[in-house]
Image (cartoon, rainbow, N blue to C red; front, side):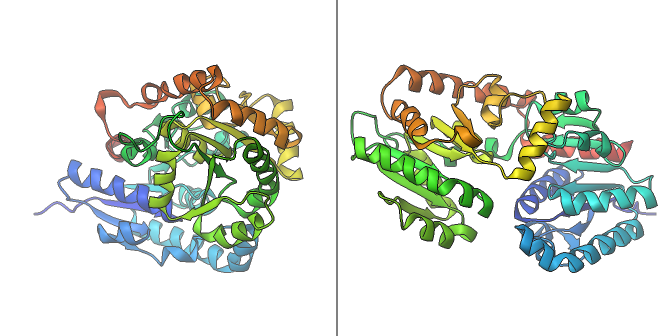
Length: 392
């Protein structure tokens, strides 16, 4: 009598989750000699590897409050449809991948209806930045959590979250695309210096930062006219960005697409960036930077609450700084975001200054701090935790 291959359910809600899920599936297939079945919710990458998706992932892959509200009835139906399907399939393990508004809604309901199914969360919500109480709540329905950042296991332990395992960041798997080859990033004293401007990947970030960044670029270009200014734009915001920079005194060269963005990173000598994953991309690329951010009134109140409760326990909002354990990268929040201040900091990074050298020396430490033990890749480390959860 032949043994039935185990069933693994993976539930993703957007493109980045589909990428993580597909890499995880590849590693599991190696571990189990492809003797495994997959169900859940995924995109083209996951379905091409054998996942039977309960519906088209684009139904729940939406960005922005207005888009979510417009599609909310469908999203709610898809949550309950996913829960029903997972319970019916009775998998050996359920893996929820990022997109917490959707995937965690599924996990909570599966835990109530089928508490015997192990649940693994892939990508920790940013409980270290805001709403730290989410960590303890997650421990009720997530058995194992796969973290992309090396400090997150300690954060969840301190906050009463689920068991958390650092499995590496996907950026660590793509360093060749971020780091310049010989001659690609010119020396400061030869050729033109390149300044990257990265005002965010969300519409709200663009609205709050684009004007400040334009004023900063004007001050830089007035004093350093030879500096090339590049602005890699995310596709869904390119039109809004082009409209916004039309009034800038010195207009940047806007580049679009992943290849063009990576090429810009490899050429860049310094960057002005919004807070977010892009700061880690820049750091791993070896680009010294200044980071700025403005939050809306709601999140400002949450930030104050976190400070009062003393649960976040970080004095930085910049990922590389948190990993490094110091403020190597200058960071400015809310009223601190002043064009003259940002420009002064950037000038130092566009010259062969002690400040530039010091930041570059700190960024060089990231490889060791983010490296996984035993030479494992991210997908291998993630697969090991998922398979161990199946055994339990």
